[in-house]
Length: 191
Image (cartoon, rainbow, N blue to C red; front, top):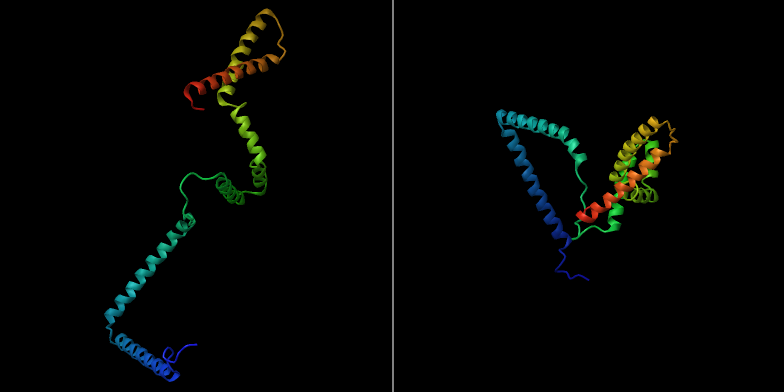
């Protein structure tokens, strides 16, 4: 238990509280007397300063409303080094969730289908192998040039085209473009 020296008696407490109350009463009286003694000029200056401050505060509130939305949320300090796969996936899920909230219902449904993990992996695989830009471009150019040549030759000799010529010419150009792309990667080292 506590000793009597540590806790003041209730009589001593009431004397201290009454002294503090008396001091506070004196402070309030002095404040009231000082406010009565102010001149009218000081009151007008105080009112003008208050109006200017209120106007500045209102302007800053109007301009600051947009700034409030732009602020980044406070994040915990990051550790050194690159981000882990788990952190990257969590960040992607948060970001895509925020974006999808702002989309219409059909757009949101389409976004959920497109950003499905299986669809994304398939798309990345196709984009990095079959649908490379150089391969498609060379396929289209080869198809145009070869089909034009075959058409002009067949027209002059009277042959009829079957329609397979375009597909075969595109495939031939695509193979040439793919080979060119891989050789370029081997030589430069940049994909």
